[in-house]
Amino acid sequence: MHMPYLHQIDPIAVSLGPLKVHWYGLMYLLGFVVAWWLGRRRVRAGRLPGVDDNGFGDLMFYSMLGVVLGGRIGYIVFYDLSEFLKDPLMIVRVWQGGMSFHGGLLGVLAAVAWWSRKHHLHFFDTVDFMAPLVPAGLGFGRIGNYIGGELWGKPTAGTVFDGCGVIFPRALPEPFASIDAATLRSYFESGALNGFARHPSQLYQAALEGLVMFCVLVWFSAKPRPRYAVSGMFALLYGSFRFLVEFVREPDAQLGYLAFGWVTMGQVLSTPLILLGLFWLWHSRRAPTLQPDVR
Image (cartoon, rainbow, N blue to C red; front, top):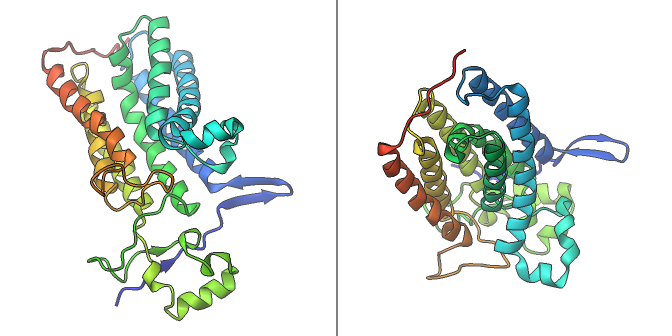
């Protein structure tokens, strides 16, 4: 018999007096380290002609700014605009959560456009170079969401997954949401919480948007591809995976479903990515291929 898992992971990795290091921040750091490592390897293999380690360092710095600023602004615009209009200072309270991948993507693209113009490179040559570096951050970020017990999935009760899943304390109704960890554990062991198990959709996304996309894009970009091809593959994979996982992910409470009782904001924002991915892959058939500079 399958049993659900009670999520009681401490989101704080290290405490040094008043300084608290959260797992979520460490996951982002890991994603950045992997992206840096892979990017330097690709630069040294001549995959971005005319760019050295210093130029790549600038690209990563501006991209990280784009992720943070775009992710935060995107969350406000796409998911919580009404609350922002009531309390504009919420935009700076990033420690309370609230980042959007789609906003972060737009921020990165803006940074890439500026950097590419400065270095006299085609915008999509840079995007094709950067695309394989992104999934590591996506995967580790979703693991951070899971450890933090946020962005959980829908209940598994009454589905083919009944009896499986994860019980997230922050998703429990009262009085369970307010009781201490030890008492909650006793309720769990008695089976009283089994009906509140949910899909660990964060881990589904970590596997698909992180591991699978990383492997596919690293393999696909291992040899030079026509311009737009790697970008198209990234957009198609991310858009498709995100659209599918949204079916088992709890919609944002402040938005709910946008149409037909099942369409979420994540699906609305991912649909253009799927279409753009297909278009870029088709368009790449007649595009030039950037050859490595192996000097």
